[in-house]
Image (cartoon, rainbow, N blue to C red):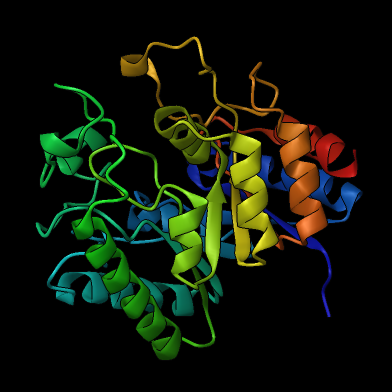
Length: 302
């Protein structure tokens, strides 16, 4: 049995001309700490990026949907598009021997949301189906607290039922649902609702950091509730430059290198992940480097 921590990078840094050498350096650094280096294919990855990363010979995981037309929304009244995109992504996972995947799957709309960072930017894609009445304040795209609305509970129940079907359809795979960045009506934001789904989870540091800011929660208290459940099978780890002094309109996502100054207390977060036995940590850092492995190892070995 392999008890090594699986430490994956998102695929972005490995698509440049120095990808082979960067992968070699990262494998060497990971081995020195007893980690198993892998790559998580980003949901915006084109076919040539998938093929390039697969050629490096390291384990792969996937941020779904892959090569998709639409994002996955299990909260929509019609589930057909979501299930089709999941099936297409699973086919790619199986082709490349992947057993771990993750996706965002809960949005407060019935309209099909185009996949972003392919033909469309994140903002243009997510603007489809955006409902300003659910926003934090007028003309903002960040979420207000709609988590006690009857509609929210109806959609949450749909997501729970459809995740159960996903587990039944693909029992050999661990396909996590991720806590959402609180914008454009993406609704899986806090531990209460994520745990209600009774499904494997991916805990994203930057998303939770932002959700706690907008919804008035404590980041580490929320983290501990996620981890205590035993359902966190994957973590997206990255730093955020934003803090309590940031104007509400300006607070955004993280995805910064781990050495970036921040107020998150990431060493505490990482220690708690280790205590909870999280098997897969993904350094979701588009400008990631081997330095992030060394920074992470200091936190992990704390």
